[in-house]
Each structure stands twice: as structure tokens, then as C-alpha cells.
Amino acid sequence: MKTNTNMKRRELTDLFIKIISSIAASIGIFFLLWIIFTVFQRGFAALSIDFFTKLPTPPGMEGGGLVNAITGTAIITFLATIIGVPVGVLTGIYLSEYGSHSRFGSLVRLVVNLTIGIPSIVVGLFVFALVVIPTGNFSAWAGALAQSIIMLPVIARTSEDMLNLVPNELREASLAIGMPKWRSIVSIIFRYSKSGIMTGVLLAVARISGETAPLLFTVMNSQFWMKSLNEPIANLTVTIYNYAMSPFDDWRQFAWGASLLITMVVLFLNIIARMILKEAK
Amino acid sequence: MKRKKLTPQLKFEAMFKYITASSATIVLIIMLLMFIQLTYNSRLSIEKFGLNFLFSSSWNPATHEYGALASIYGTVVSTLIALIIAVPMGIIIALFLVEISHPVVSKITGNAIELLAAIPSIIYGMWGLFVFAPFFADYIQPFLINNFGDIPFIGKLFQGAPMGIGMLSAGIILSLMILPFITAVTRDVFIMVPAVVKESSYGMGSTTWEVTHKVTLRYGIKGVIGACFIGLGRALGETMAVTFVIGNSHLISASLMDPASSIASTLANEFGEASEPIYLHALMQLGLILLLMTFFIQILAQIWVGKLKKSMGTGL
Image (cartoon, rainbow over all chains, first blue to last red; front, side, top):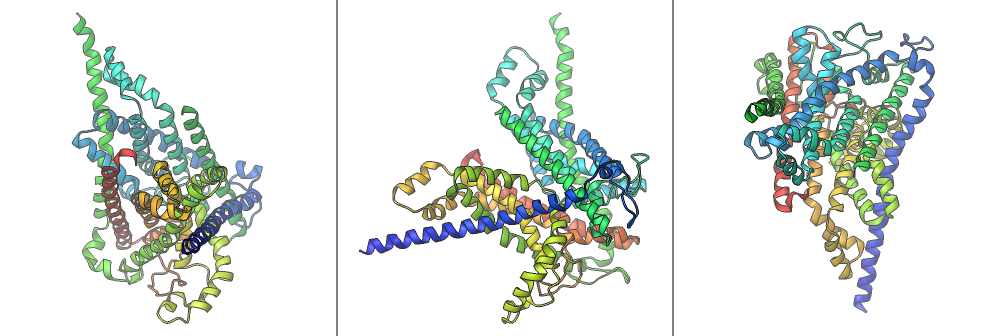
């Protein structure tokens, strides 16, 4: 008799918890979907052919677009990628193939992990102090440098993780047939983990293309076409920040359009990265 | 004869190692330079205010009186609010995904949550300012103020005008931003709990909830705490999601409804106006404080994760 009611109570508790956690999960997921829904709903209203082809207009004037900011973000992201990826991948190779057990290797690994946790706005401040103050002007290069510093540790860590997945037999086999170590790394080990490293790179590119804070103090923003990489250039994320904070309705509209564009690019890169990884598996 | 042929290969061998090692050194140099540059560029403020900078809450660009207390307070409180909401919620959602929901639902929702973790923080900020803040001011805040504002002691937290923006809004937006992240990591930890352990508990007649809190949660608690550390590090330095909704006031107020400021929001807001060297150096010092805070937390997290690996093998 007693065990019966006890069992009932336990089952009731179980049901109660299940209901509560389903509700909590729905609430959390509801809010996250709400965010996505808003971005798509308000963003689509702002997208047009002009949005991708015309320069911005002053507030109140009809039309205009953000073509300069779109190219600006693409350029900064591209520059950051060509700086950050080689250094990051080479660091990953060092950590996995040469310094995996050395004291220096452990130090680098620790600092890589610490650098991943540094807030992006602090990286922005750092590049401001390092580049903008001495050269005296904001520039696309400074922004690309800041973004590459954010990318570097992420890529170094994923590369190391991916290289560590390579079976040791492959290393031994390639060395046993008389390959020099660098050759074995480049054409055997690296090739084996190529898709994993590629995934890491894509995820890092996705991350920096949506970063705003490191660009605030390094590239600033501009209303015009860029003339050189040594000057402030327009970019999407700082434009979103400036336009959203402005009191003009048409500027806010543009901010939503730019948000949608960035969100779609980031989601697209993430999905591609996942597909590459899945295929490799 | 053969030896001669090999020499260039060996030379390249040494060179390749040297190239990778010098790439690895770059991270060290960056870290070192970051501390040096931020300290050097805040020297005027460090000289003038000394340790007082940490304990003074006055922030007045007109008279050049600067203190970091209000910003530090805002950073800590908004992060705490975010963790108080996001950690239990993240654990519950992860449990829902792993233990309760149908595998198909779990897979789709799990993937969606991982994608949401990738959405840039400025999107959360925009949504917070234009969608959440008006909703919050119209429906939630009046309810909180009317129902909790009169309770002695805790009531102080909920007094004020329903403005939509403020400390609580910033904390909530921040919690939404770290929620997908904490959920994803926690889910991975729970998935790694061996099925045998769970099944033996079910075999003794336990209900799902009993297995969950007595087995899964216990087994994975260290990993969950690790996830919280990383979420904490993210929330502390988050700029865009906070700047839009925190209200940017340098007054320390007991009420969570009032506007406040965090280190990151102060930097984003005021950097463009800092024309005087002392103003700039005070902002740089704020950045240095933020760097030290996150650095310290990351080191704790690393020690924690190191312990984890030792006690659970290299699986985590």
C-alpha cells in the first residue's frame, strides 16, 4: 500500500518535471525564434536592388543603398582571412606535430585558449593603440588586423584538434617510406584533416563577418566609396550600429536590411561548414 | 653522393619547423603586446587616479573625474542576471533535448540552437532595442513594479519607471545571447554520459527525472560548470548586445529597472567623444580592467578544464 502511493508520487513528480522542462524549453526556443523572425520580417522589407547597388543617401532622402558597406565588409573579412588563416593553421601544425609535449607548446596552447576568451572590444582597443595612434588614422588595414587577431586563436585551436584526429599509423607509415617530416605533414597529415580545418576556417570567417566591436575603434565607418585601404571605409556592422542608434526611420530600415544580410551570410557559412564536416565523416 | 641529395630536403625540414614555431610565437607576442599597449595608453589615468579609479563611481568628462566603479558594477550585475537566467534554462533545455524529447525533435532543435549560437551579437542588440524593450516596458515591467516594488528589501530592485531599457533588460538580452551556447555545450556533456550508467538506473526502476538529476546531472556537473565559465567569459565582454539596451548611465542604482552602463558599453559609446588624452586614457584603463577580468576567469576555466580532463580522461 505504502509503496503504491510512493510510486504514484514519484511518477507525478516525474510528469511535473517533464511538463515544466518542456515549457521552459519552449519559452527559450520561442524567444530565439522570435529574434530570427523579426530579423527576416523587418529585413526583407528593406532589401531591394538599390540596397545592393547604390550608395547611402542622407537621412530623409528616398532610395539609396549600402553597396559601399557590403563591399567594405567583404574586403575587411577577406584581408583578415588571408592574414589570420595561414598563421592560425601553422600554429595548429606546430602545436600538434612539433610542440605537442614540449613546454613551449603547452605555453602556446594555454595562451591560444586565453586569447579566444578576450572580448572583441578589447582587441579593438589594442589595435587602436597599436596601429591607429602611431599612424594617426583609422584604416581598413587596422580593422582587418583586429579581425585577424580574433580569428587566429580560433583557427589555431580547431586546426590542432583536427590534426590530432589523424591516426598515428599514417604519420609512421609516411615517415617509414622515407618522407621528410614536413612533406609528410603537408601531403599526408594535412590532407587527411583538410575538411576539418576548412570547417574551422569557415566558422571563424562567419564569426568575424558579424563582429562589430573590433571595428568601432579601427575602421570606423564612411558614407562614401573607399579610395584606399589606408582610410576609414564603410562596413555593414558599424553601419547597423550607427543607423540603428539614429532617429531616422529610413536609416533604421537599412539597419534591419543589413542585419538580415549579415545573419543570412553567417547562417549560410555555418550550414556549409557543417555539410563539409558531415561529408568528411 | 646520396647525402648531397638529401641536404636541401633537411634544410627545408628545419625551415618548416622554424616557420611553424614562429607562427606559434605570434600568439604569445600578441598577448604580451596587448597588456603592454593597454597599460601604456592608460598611463595618464593610472598616474592621476591610482587605485581610486577602481573605487570611485564619478564619471565626469567635463571635470575629468573618472572612476570605473559604475561600469564594473554594471558589467558584473548584468552578467549575473544573464547567468541566473541562462544557466538553469540552458540545463533544462539540454535535458529536454537529451532525455525527454523525441529524437527527431531533439535533432532539429539541437541543430537550430547551434545555428543560433552563431548569430552576431549586434542582431540581439537590435532586437533588444526595437522589439524587446517596448514589449518589456508595456507588459513585464509594470507587472514587476506593481507586484514586487512594495516588498521590503527585494522591492528596491524593482522600483522605478518602466522604460524598457536598463540593467534588467540588458541582463535578459545577454542571457538570450549566451543561452544557445550554454545549451549546446551542456547537451554535448549530457550526451557523453555513458548509456550503461543511465540504463542501470532505469533498470532499478527509476523514473526519467530521477535518472536525470541523480545520474546524468551528477555525472556531467563538472562539464556543465565548465560551460558556465565560458558563458561567463562571453557575457562579461559582450558589447553590442548590451550597449543597445543598458541605457548608458553612470549612476549606480539599486533598482534593476534603471539605466546603467557596463565597461564594454561605456567604451562603445564614449570612445568617439574622447578627444582629451586623459579621457582616452581613462577609457583605455577600463579596457585594461575588462581584459584582466576576462583573463582571470579564463585562467580559472583552464584550470577547471585541466582538472576535468585528469579526472575523466581526455574524452571531454
